[in-house]
Image (tube, rainbow, N blue to C red; front, side, top):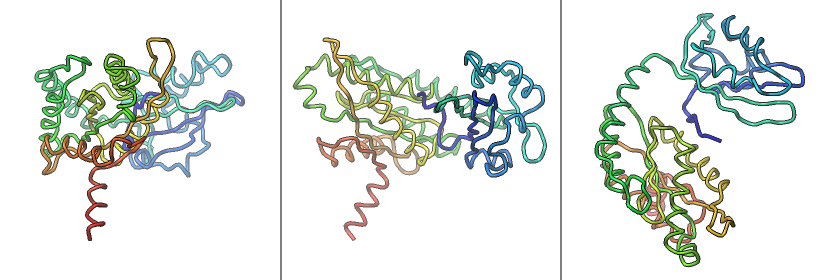
Length: 312
């Protein structure tokens, strides 16, 4: 599943029940409750149409097909030109909408409606465009993998440090290390392991937002720069990313598969930490965990706090 939303996004979870032909609200996360002025307690089990303008409610009623699933809630809402929600103040507010299909169980299909407040979106998008143009301007590719190289990642982090300190965009950087790389290298060789690293990077690329950055740090390590995210949301994103990689085995030349696991260390970008410090912190944390680290997720700042406490 695409990781199309962060932990700090506003999300309404809805259930399409094909058995009783209903579309009901299942949950609002705290960000959605705050944004809409509504609560899960008040809305759980209520028809989604209760918080939608009449035109969108009628569109769902007319086009959602509960039998063959061709036109489900996700596909119908994806065609809405201007999505709005009626909040707790009874006012209609427009949002930028992403629909993410979640779990299915029996006749029930769940969808996450990810809402972004349009206030300030244009400014945010302008900042993002400047950032992306700068990324492309200094990007150089690793000749072995075709990914942005370590120097490019360092410049990206440096640029994001500037915007983070201005308060425009928050970001986090991580290094993802392939577990048991030395054993894999000894068994399959250099060419296969380069392809294996590219495979892991591709899973990351497919699972993250378009403006997140995925690059090569070394033969066994991929760097990931998450845009527009808090440290808390980054932790959840990287945790899910570990399982995405584990769920996508690498196809060997002989058509057999090898399962992958990874260890991840991550760090907030910005503050007093320069780009070299951020990357070095993540590298040092992985080195400290040792070559036999398996499927570990570590916040570098938390690790440093634990080390300081142990010294005391």
